[in-house]
Amino acid sequence: MIQSIPAVLVQLLGRRFRVRSSGQEAFRIALPIMLGAVGEQVVGLLDTAFMGRVGVVELGAVGLASIWYFMLLIVGLGLGSGLQILVARRLGEKDTPAAGRAFDQTLSLTLVIGAVMYLLHWTLTPMLFRYFTQSDAIYTACMTYLNYRSLDLIFVLQIFLLEGFYNGLGKNRIVVYTTIILATSNALLNFVLVFGLGSIPAMGIAGVAIASAAAHVLSWAVLWGHLFYKKYPKAFELFRTLRLRRTTTLRLLNLSAPIILQYLSGMVAFFVFLSLIEKMGETALAASNVMKAAYLFFMIPTWGFGSATSTLVSRRIGEGRKNSVWPTLWYVAQVNFLLMLVLTSSLVLFPRQVLGIFTTNAQVISATLDLLWVTVPALWGYALSGILLNALIGTGASRWTMYIEMLNACLYIGYLFVAIHFGASLQTMWMSEWIYVTMLAVLPFVLLKSGRWRRIEL
Image 1 (cartoon, rainbow, N blue to C red):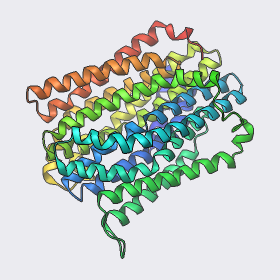
Image 2: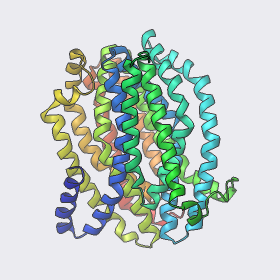
Image 3: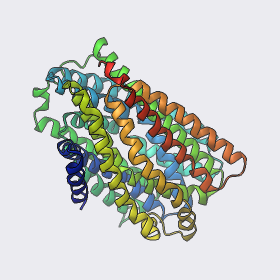
Image 4: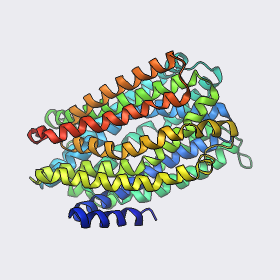
């Protein structure tokens, strides 16, 4: 079903706009990425669903803690995105050894940064959460989750590296298999560790963190195994330039650093958002976490098509086909928007059933239902803005996307502080998503139409 709906959209729009081949190529790249995102989101969904059956405190805490944990991983995500763009560009230029050197430099940076992030977690996290959380119960639950979850930090950073490499190649079917393994192992481990089984005691929020960490380590092993099974080390001359080299490293950092700051700006803004919601009460935080889980799940198609857009745009430029960039991204955006309309219809038509997946608490479900009229239109807007932003990233204009995201974060946080100062409701706080989505569409559109990206060299 997942495959049939986008395929029909590709065919219908392809007849009208005569760029069906680009749409089908985008879908071939996007589907494994979407399935990979499903795997990652299944972990988040399971965390939320299991904690929704443990308690309101645990349900709210797992959402706040997971946002902070993802912020620790942002550097790895940015490096993986930078690697994806470089690999796609070098393949367009028929220079496979250069793609291999980019992989080696990213691997070395990931190992160093992983160690630094691990130290930051154990020194900075306790102080930060003591400052941002008002409830002692939520603070304790957050720290329990993070201390166990941090066991997979270095492994997840390398997962981003490997996924960036496969996405850049456009040969990411392995993501399908790792998705199945990640989701299945996480579900089984959650069932055993959260509620207990036989001689294994019920561990609650500690169990959900251990289950997530173990599932990611298993996925990490599968991704590395596939790399050697496909003999990519020989084909791309991998592991020959692990010592950091100034030229390649600077090129990677120049491309990745703005992406990292871009992602970090967005995550900091959302962390501030949840920390302000926490001060509105444990039920408000729990409802926001349920809404966040559903919101992020419905973003999966945009992440998939967005990543595919970055790969296609970078490859088209490497092939010298800059004039095909705009028709390609615009076509993919339309397919993604129509797909989003179809998928969100379930949230509109059957809201209690969908939200009931995450919690059985009637009060939390009622508070979450009030947020739907805000979040569903934001999802429709993100279906367009996400494609435009990723197209801009694919041109190599990552510095521009960084400025866009930082400006957006400032407006977002400014709105939140003004809103909470005047005693805004939970719905009004969530309306900040409208500001975020609008700016994310308008600014990339203006920059792409200006044509200034044509002068960027990687």
